Image (cartoon, rainbow, N blue to C red; front, side):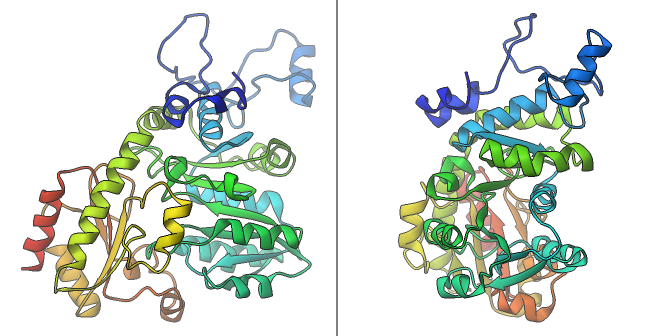
Length: 394
């Protein structure tokens, strides 16, 4: 089936069936095509494939059947026409940028994005003559004021990392369209199981497949989803030339992860909401950030835009860095790691890890305090997670 035929099926069915093309061996599970190159029927056939006149596999840097199966499946889940799989989530952002931008172009970016995303735009794309304006994620007047005639695209992640701020995708998409710009949305925290930015007006969706798409912390990968013409014309050529490729084995792992995506995201969200509600009742917690809580500044928007709150909960404790570190170090069950999207609950201190390379003023502008703790709530028993935190505080 093509991408449009799959739209008649529910996301749970798409996540299990879409993208698979059985070989003559009639395998039931998706195969791994562990090959770097492919054999052509003739020199003429090779020339036709290299020129693009005839479709087919050429070289696994940019054409591999296992990777293509993952691409087709994720495109179906996001209601997109095309997906390009790459080596990591940051590779997905960089590939999108290098494919779309040229010297003199301008980007408007939310200030509330992953630290390395800020550094990519600020420290590296600037070397090639691309300028970036950072704005408060929920200040829509600031988004409008920042757009220039040379603005190529607007970039945001929603929910944000680590404060789970929610941006109105439809509203920012309207700003982009009115100024002949594109909207690029990082959908890492929600995945298509909880949010579909393309349905809300976004032009491109970015994923770190490393996180919830895998779901068990096994592999590194990224993906770009959008309209076929835009991706094929402007972004795919960079993958083919620059080579930020996804390995066939990793693509196979992600295919297996997608099969349980909807079930896992519902369970992550249920556990996270339970934990957030409990944290709000604890005297030792100053503030909790979770979109599923009525106290969250964009709770009403989250209810309209997302199917559930997701698996990330952040909260502030007294004592700044020392207090946060002491709490984190006193846990026994939770894994101290900056990764997220795992079935295992992880805990980290954003100010010194994920956003540690930002300046103090940049962290302050993004609302990331020294006392902030981020928990990616896993699928363990919620009572055990709560007990571990309570014991750590005690």
